[in-house]
Amino acid sequence: MRLQRAQGYSLIELLLVIGLLALIASVAVPDFDNNRDVTLDRAAAEVATALRFARSEAIRTGEGHGLTISQSTQKVTVKEYDISIVPIVTVGTLTHPISKQPYDFNVNTSNGTKGVTISNSTDIFDYGSEGRRRSLIFDANGTPIWIIGSDPTRHLLEDGTVELSLGTQQRFVSVAPVTGRVTVQ
Image 1 (cartoon, rainbow, N blue to C red):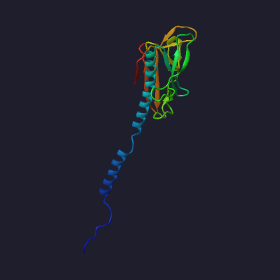
Image 2: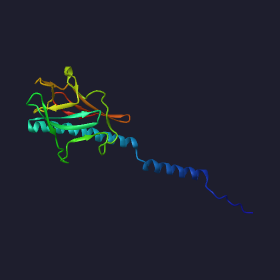
Image 3: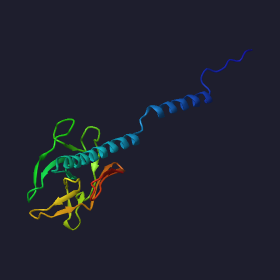
Image 4: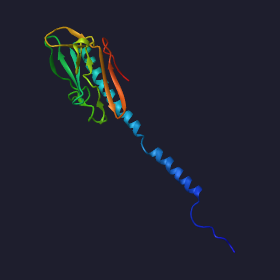
């Protein structure tokens, strides 16, 4: 009599198929942490670009340019200031050099940065004894300053670090006192 082999798959064959499916799934499923890194990096680059643009416009034109960063609205707005008169006056919002639209954006809802928040617990720009402010102005030399009310004294920035968060990850965009150099960490 002839023995018939039972129909079906062996345990080894099943484990091999499951292993191959797991390998394919690990390659096919996107790495969500990496996507968060990219989103956070994009938001940090956007804030750094706005700061650099304001600084370069101040140096190029010899007029005050700067920006306001609001934690409550999550909005960054690049502005032109008239710092030749006291009190200083906001001339208007600058236009983006590429889109030609007003240079303001919301880091929490903008395309490519959705979900990122400005997580500073206090106003971002610290002018020492004069306190913290939401706004920063670059003078004609590119130096970050602030002028308070009718006092024509120019107060130098002591610390200006924007904290950006997405989940548990963070990025920091810093403006150096005196030089106005912008770095992303």
